[in-house]
Length: 216
Image 1: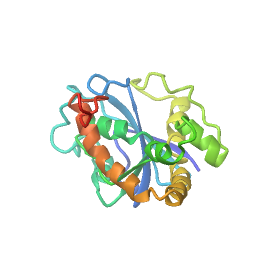
Image 2 (image 1 turned 90 degrees about the vertical axis):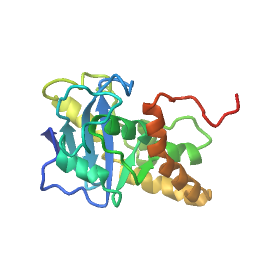
Image 3 (image 1 turned 120 degrees about the vertical axis):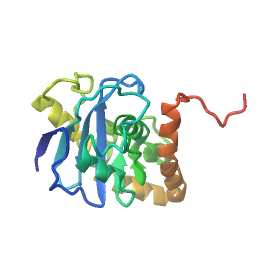
């Protein structure tokens, strides 16, 4: 098991397989202002690949020119593949940040935070750290969460932190799937996952937390 660091793209000889975990690191939480800096992925085999995104100008709501293939072609191609299932924690943000910066709208997604909220209704603790501790007995550190992800070269501490956000998602998904089946909410959860790319697009257009379905 190892954490690999790549600059600008995932190496061409790495295939992430049919189901892979993905997370992102940005300069902040404002999707319009704060650019995507890092994408980390894992096939669930114990290895993680931390990719530092190529720096470009004009990042914001308008997607990267073309499809994003010009920016990080090997990674973007796999992110854009609808046949591959992408596992995320709070996928709404990751989908939006990737789309805004690379122009790739990820579909066929699974969000562990959303699934947790649908079946772990006795608690308000749905963070990745909480899920890792409850389901796997694993403690992950969030010390590097607010570090500067725009640096020229990532530190070993940043690489290991980024990797920890994707290394456990396959196991967490399996645990949450069992709960979704038990509570009869698998189909409903899938419909929510299918909506996430559209929710991300609404975020980028400025709707954010406003409930457009509400009567007001």
